[in-house]
Amino acid sequence: LSGAALGGPVACVSKVELRVACKALLDRDTLNKSDPCVILMVQNQGQWTELDRTEVIKSNLHPVFAKVFTLDYYFEEAQKLRFEVYDIHGTHSIGTRDDDFLGGVECTLGQIVAQKKMVKPLFLKYAKYAGKSAITVHAEEISGNNGYVELFFCAKKLDDKDLFSKSDPFLEIYRINDDGTEQLVHRTEVIPSLCIYLSFSMCEGSVCHCLVVSQCLVWDSDSRGKHDFIGEFYATFREMQKIGGGSKVTWDCINPKYKLKKKNYKNSGVVILSDLKLHRVYSFLDYIMGGCQIHFTVAIDFTASNGDPRNSCSLHYINPYQPNEYLKALIAVGEICQDYDSDKRFSALGFGARIPPNYEVSHDFAINFNPEDDECEEIQGVVEAYQNCLPKIQLYGPTNVSPIISRIAKLSAGEETIKDASRYHILLILTDGVVTDMADTREAIVRASYQPLSIIIVGVGNADFTDMQILDGDDGVLRSPKGEPVLRDIVQFVPFRDFKTASPAALAKCVLAEVPNQVVEYYSHKAICPMPPVPSCDSPTSLANTPTESLPAVGTTA
Image (cartoon, rainbow, N blue to C red; front, side, top):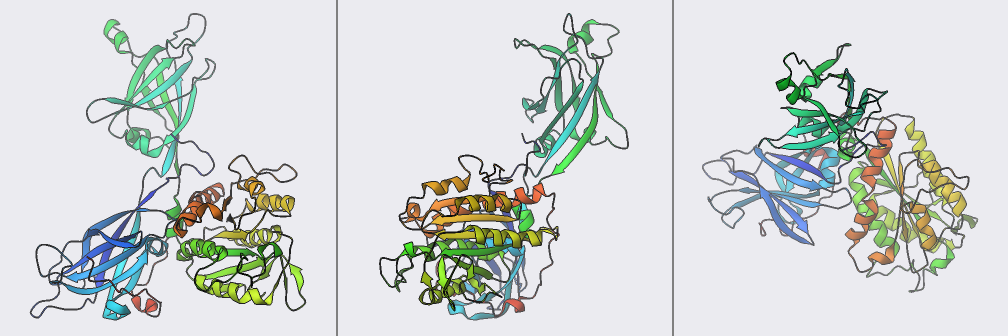
């Protein structure tokens, strides 16, 4: 049961429904039009496997499929999907050599939910366009318990069960199941005899299960646990919703034994619903599908403790055959975040180096050396800017990260004045040691916790990062040097060495898992609702020049 805590209840896993339609498919039949079917493939550990398929629609080049694909959605994972369209000739296995491949497309589930309605051209083998064919995928979250209800009860003339004082009542609400059994939904706190008001909140989903009928029991509390039964009544949520316009909903509290024994028995009191409040709790996908953009910024440690980049022992050494730890962490996290930023431009900053032209130490500089525009095109652009930057700077120190945290927090604060859920920031800090300006960093994080910002810190190399755990806040509330606590826990710290033998996906999953809750927590605290979804263009022409992965195996692995 959920209360009105900061952020409210948030599901750990979201389920998403995908609906598929195609347009202008290739016609592979001689006498009739193609009989299309769409197969949904998912990638797991580098292998493509079939998840599900649509029905076959006869003789139709513009099919709208009734089949709905259902998937679990995880923000922290790059969930790669492939849609393959076939013209079906047989009645048995689909996607065999007897069937004609009409085109396919690869994407991630993150790309689909970020657009809500994704339109992409279909490709044949080797990235060749399948004519003007296109596929449209609509995403919709399957709502679960997306809110809670606050009920305010009072009672009048309840039977006194105590000898020298009035009753100390509490209320139990049970759901009547289909098989007639009862299941406890909520038990209120005990109300002292001088107070007759009962106030509590419960998950909206739990209340809605009581739409048919629920049994409500009123008890007089006993400190020894032998509670005295006062009476019961039956109610539905639909009855409760009739409250409004100053009117209240009342029920007679009936004790069945008294009703049988007493000829003129009326009730054992009256229970009154004095108020009902419905609270909507939005999910992370509500904000993303409403158009919230996730802006990704990376800040890289260029202090001398990393070692000379020209030396193969340096943490900044560029090995042409294998990326260093900085690049591995950057790519792992950045490739997830880029699905949620429509312009695919990312800020790339550095700290702890002497930079041209005067070679003064800077703890906040653009690694593309353009102070007017520190953004790079896509994650690959960030990688190239990092590699080009290394020969031009002098690694120095100390390891001060508070200037960059303060800068991004200030940027986030400026956007906060818009008062809508249009942009949230993720700052990835890559460092090889414990920060030198710990007091200023704690102060900066406390200030940043009031802004639409999450901070991920990855410790690169083999340094002792014990002191960095303080910033994470998992072992206690992070406080500023003056004792002010953070409003939200916005920092996640992990040492890269814990993931050296794991896949890059494992690192991304670990550091990004808390972000959805942090996004919802921020906007819930500010009472900011998701923006209404932006209509997307039906035409795939705007995506025609967007690089799309080739499909070398399409048509052969269904």
